[in-house]
Length: 193
Image (cartoon, rainbow, N blue to C red; front, side, top):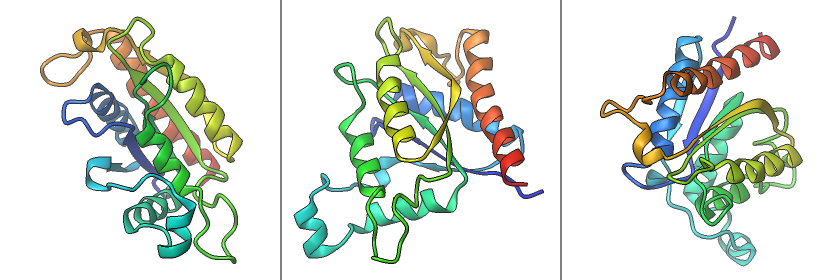
C-alpha cells in the first residue's frame, strides 16, 4: 500500500498563529496513521491578489504555480482556517483562487481539487472557534470537486486553549484534532490503495 500524501496548510501568515498550532496536531495524527505530509506555510509562498489581467499578461505567478503543483501531487488536504469578520481569510481564498486556474488549454478544469479529500479545522479567540469560516471553506471546496469530511473541529478561546508545547489543554480537543488527521489518512488509504 502506498502512503497517503497529504498537503497541510493554514490560512494565516502569523508566526504564532493558533491555526498553525492546530494544524501541527492534525498533521501528527495523519503521520501516525502512515501518511506522508507536506506542510506549506504561506509566508514562504507570497502570491499577488488574483487578477485575470496579470494572469493574461504574465501567466500564473511562480508561487501560485508551486502551490497548485503541490495540491495536484497530493491526495488530500488538512486545512486550518482562521476566521476574519465571520468568514475566511483573504489569504486562503486567494490561494485557492489561483490554484483553481488552468495553466494550459489541455489541462482539465480544477485539476488541483477534483477527487481530492479534505479535513477542516479552525481556532479563534472568539466564542465560536472560527466555525463560520469552515462553513465557507466547506461550501467552496465541495463546489470545486473536493470531498470534505463531515467531522471538523473548532477551538474556542484559542488564546487560552494551548499549552506551551503547542498541544491543546483539553484532552478531548487534542484527541479530536489528531483524529481529523488520522481519519483523512485512513480514508485516502482506502480510496487510493
